[in-house]
Length: 178
Image (cartoon, rainbow, N blue to C red; front, side):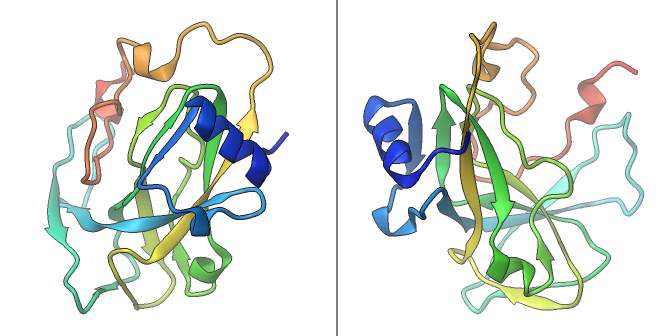
């Protein structure tokens, strides 16, 4: 079950959903619009290794925007910091973003109950496109959880993406054992 706008507001009042900054004008019928933060990052090496800690280089999006290029993976970050303590958050691209040929996530659209952070975006594009800090980039949808939670994401010792940040975070696949 997807939460409606009224239910999202109720959960914000209860403190089970936190969105900072919160703007009522960004609340849709059953979603909340999130915006692109001011930082992007790219990997420093062209060939990535799933077993290695692949380094990234952060940079700030200039006031006059930044042109994304096809064939490059950009890591972005949401302006909004969120916490979700009783629901499963899903981040999806906005249709307006998709119609510009921008994908905001490769596979990681679902958050976990207990996720407390900004969202790192895996941005790619179909053709060159200029983007801007603060532009609407996606929407959060909240699903109800059935059953009790054994351990919230933010309470797990092995949670790889729980350090609060305002910048995109590189893959932590290298922390897995395989």
